[in-house]
Length: 254
Ligand SMILES: Cc1cc2nc3c(=O)[nH]c(=O)nc-3n(C[C@H](O)[C@H](O)[C@H](O)COP(=O)(O)O)c2cc1C
Image 1 (tube, rainbow, N blue to C red):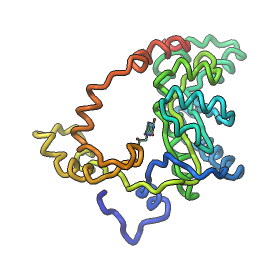
Image 2 (image 1 turned 45 degrees about the vertical axis):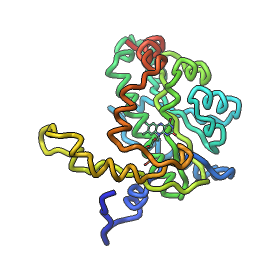
Image 3 (image 1 turned 30 degrees about the vertical axis):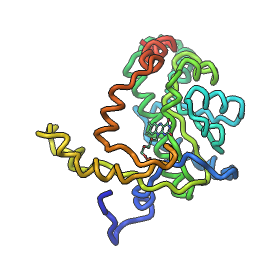
Image 4 (image 1 turned 90 degrees about the vertical axis):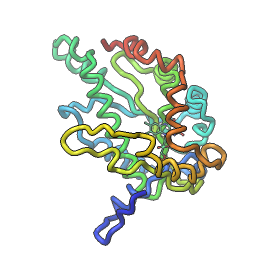
């Protein structure tokens, strides 16, 4: 990590720079007042056009959690104290529009889908920041999209909704290392995009740093270099995930 710690650091940025995904939690509930506060933070988050085109499903039923863990292929999801699924939600506003005798065909397009998708992501990250400020650990779950159709079925998602990401929250039951990140100068450009001359050379230091990171998710093994991880990921293919667009269409979006 680039060392940005300075005397003017405040507690918000300190928490943000100390972010680590937590995958095992203490079996202790998150106080109800904190959960309510997390919902308030999500509710206060900026949203596209002020239309709040997302919803959160708070999964409290262990049987549903177990099924989500199956879809994700991550059994540690069963043990998450609090589990939230963020969804694109155009169903609510479409219902409001219909009640106002307005045709909702524009509510079904990709523009509205992505507005909802962005709203859901921003609300989720705001909740992460708030949760971490209370010493809670968090874990995103993109793995719910391994079978998005099954998630729609499990959560009874109506038309014009779609799952975006899961978020687990609880008191940390593990203390992972801070995972290295690529240097900002490789990801932040001024005015226009700047392709690099030699990508492997550019990530050489980061590759080395990553090899000194021990991943608790992989049984505390040393990680491959970043470029090896990229190469491996680009060779991976999951049939159900390739069919995401079909499920999005099945949910009524065009
Ligand atoms: C959109 C998104 C989806 C993710 N999905 C999963 C997941 O399904 N399972 C998991 O264990 N971690 C998941 N993660 C966590 C990432 O693996 C983690 O953020 C990344 O490896 C960096 O590690 P760190 O958060 O500890 O710094 C996800 C993160 C994001 C942003």
